[in-house]
Length: 134
Image (cartoon, rainbow, N blue to C red; front, side):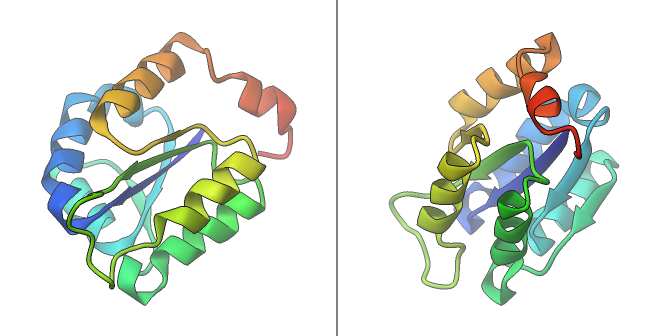
C-alpha cells in the first residue's frame, strides 16, 4: 500500500510522534510526503519516504495528482483547522479527490490510528484488489 503523509506546520510534531509510534507498520508500506513533513519524519524515524515539494511549493498538488491516478491508498493529513496559514496545503481539493477515488483519509490522530490498525489487520486490502495496477 502507498501511504501519503501531509501535516500543517502546527501538526508536524504530532505527525512525527505518530510515525515513531507506528514505525513498524509504516515500514512495511510505501510512503510519500510533502517536502518538509517527509524530511522531518524520515529524520526522526529512519523510514524511507519519497519526498515531493513542500506544500507551499505544490507538494500537496503532486500528491493530489497521484490520488487522481489512483496511486495513493491512504492519506494521513494532519491539518490545523483553527490556525491554517495561507501557504499551507488546501485540504478541500485533497479531501474531494479522496472521496472521488475512494481513498481512506485521516485528518487527525484519532482517525489515523484507526486507519493504521485497519491497515495492519488487512481491512484495507480491498484497495489492492480493486486497483490491480497499484
